[in-house]
Amino acid sequence: MGKYKKVKITKGSSGWGGPLIIKPKEGKDYIVSVTGGGIHPVAAKIAELSGGRAFDGFKSAVPEKEICCVVIDCGGTARIGVYPMKKIPTVDVVASGPSGPLANFITKEYLVSGVKIANIEVVED
Amino acid sequence: MAGPCIMETVLKSRFIEIGSEMDELIKGGVFIFFGENVPSSLKPYCIIHQVEVIHPLKIGDIIQIGKDSAIITSIGELANKNLLELYHLVIKNNGLSKPQLPGDINVKGTLPNEVSIGETMLILRKKNKTAL
Image (cartoon, rainbow over all chains, first blue to last red; front, side, top):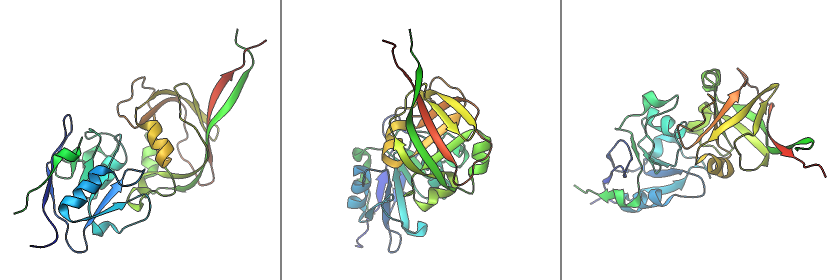
């Protein structure tokens, strides 16, 4: 058994998209919290269950290719579009759906929203 | 009766970087701002500004960029949190009285078609001083 585990993230009530299945791997194991105010509890939980490393995206930078997934608290225009557009799995703790100028890039393969701690589970194979 | 009208500064900031993809957003009346600590992935889609004065915004506040100005018509429930924590603002010139998204700040008026580094944004509030 490796140190990383597969984790399933399901949308919360009135959320959108997903479920996302993520599994960190060596060199791509950052769970980046792009939320402000430190690491969001949802990011901390995903890191804890998956074995990934929680990281505050507003404190310092991490190369995009080392990001396993990002956690955002977006009200719906910038962050919610940019990360899915870059095909980085995106977990929004706010129950937003595709919207704004980047809405076309938002797909349920890369975005799950309205996520709470209870929506995160290990699905180790 | 309202007395002389004094404007108070709610926000003052200076643009230090303009994202490479901002042009199209601005022409569509959408202005996205972040502070200097914005993750690099988001940089192309925003204006990075240095904030000198900052207070929570209210409906009726007036946004001035260069010679243009617009009045705030509605504010999403997350907009002020974004502003205070991240210097993050999403301003949309659509005049909506109900925000479509919790992060939106909707305004009505004229905003520039382009912005440049070094420009200043002011957000002002009318302060009615009651005459004695």
